Length: 300
Image (cartoon, rainbow, N blue to C red; front, side, top):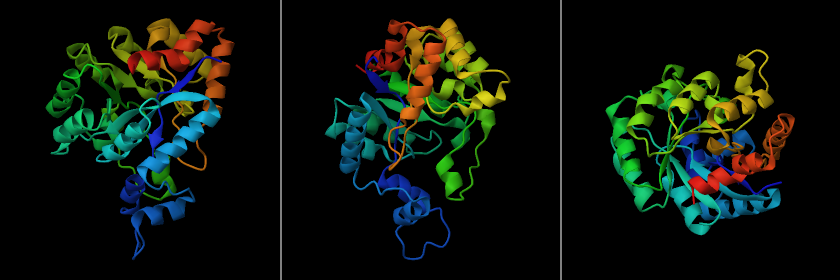
């Protein structure tokens, strides 16, 4: 097995759970993070440095060398920044930004410059904005001025399981999730790496089209890829085979979509994807690029 790097892990910090808990009804005097975790039955994350240490132990156990950590609510970049400072050789920092927030530009600048983070994460369907919005262009300007930075754009179907578990609504708008909306941006910012997770999460054809037209677009392979059920007859093996035929082996990034404890790192995702690569006869050099090499090249 080649060295494994994971391009898609969520850093579910105490501020993350507190943000969800504040949306719950009937909190009373209970701390919002405690209330959310009690309803979920998950382990409290503790401080960001302690959570980072736990992730290192988990990655060591799983044989994973490096991983991205995603701050999974806007405004939580500092949690991931703490983790990256604690273990700079193991983690690459990603952080979510809502471009419609008045402080989005300032938050992004601080995270990239002072926080040591590398990738801006955009969720157009979640925050209900168009990728053609000038505020999105301003964020791309900030990334383009920093050659080591990248942008992650969630396209396609967006479901947040933790919100469903807590009984919280998810008022997302999938109309903003078409990967084709990236075309003009990717051409305008041709030096900015743009990562589209989950093979486009249901917009597989569209993700392949825009990646074929724009060599700065990469696809991550993360999660269970349940979106495949929208494509009759499609299998995970066929997804890998089609993606390799269109974008080649240098623009696919393995990801697990791991997030919380005690579940920890999702080895089953690696097993499924490794089996899919076996089924299509991917040679060792292709496997090595997808499972780790492309991550190291992008985030050297």
